[in-house]
Length: 369
Image 1 (cartoon, rainbow, N blue to C red):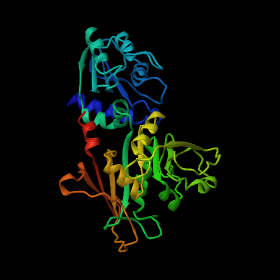
Image 2: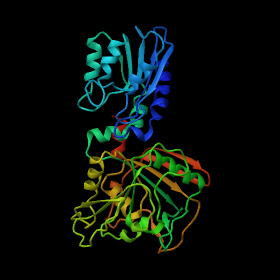
Image 3: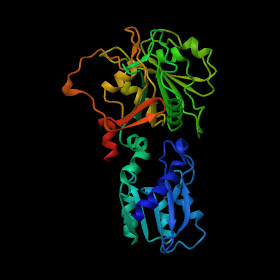
Image 4: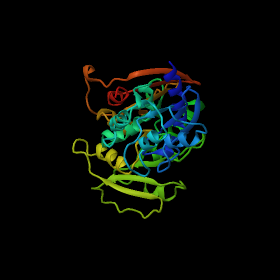
């Protein structure tokens, strides 16, 4: 249990890096002396900065010879923006390295462990493995696939509506759910909505209610460029990435804070190819994508197996109107035997609302990496 207790503290340190480390993982490290007393702590502060192991070793004011280092991710063993951490570990005279999860980057992936063992350093692996993977789930998916980790959040009524007949959804859920939404935005690389959702709410899609290391990038999916006039009047301070159909004949507006990316239409439903959208998002090194709807976007992402994690917030209201907008609004047919399933789900009272949080099959495979 000692290893697990120290690793919990390592994970707390790692989380302090927040989204400033993206696309790098969040990593923490703790150095212990020969008597298992903590003598140094550190974490990866930002992308391009010193790694957690170096920060922890530099923080160590006592002799590290014969000691241990705990780290939630396998140390690097290659030259990138910084030298290999394994070299510093060996030079420090440490005799034990306790690792939460292997780094699946092909440049590392067990190689660092091998180097450490070749230098007579004991390596203990898989301590709090699932917790360590969950913390950096976007990094693991970023390394292994061409798309980011996708989290969907929807606030719905008891009968599954997300907006009234006017398209207004502010605010179905209560204040606690709103704070959670801002916490999830703060932990993300980017926040994405469809054009109709943006036009209905004119949401800034930024973080205002909680502390935030770095504002997420705003992404709007706008097949037919319906949002241009609204964006021209938008006072959003950050960059907005607008994905639109490469077949759309409408001319683009030159807006200083908008980046346009054309996307091919899907031959099945003539909407934007969502896999291509996600690939483009990954290519610009955004590996945690937070999707806030609307119904068509959520339905299509779910139907195509592109969602990894879901926050489903149920408000204690009925919206008894056939013209109100459904949370999931797909037109394809489904059989009970083939329904998408939520795994490892939990429920929580969130002020006036009920939160259901869980993972799809796509996300589950990374929690069992």
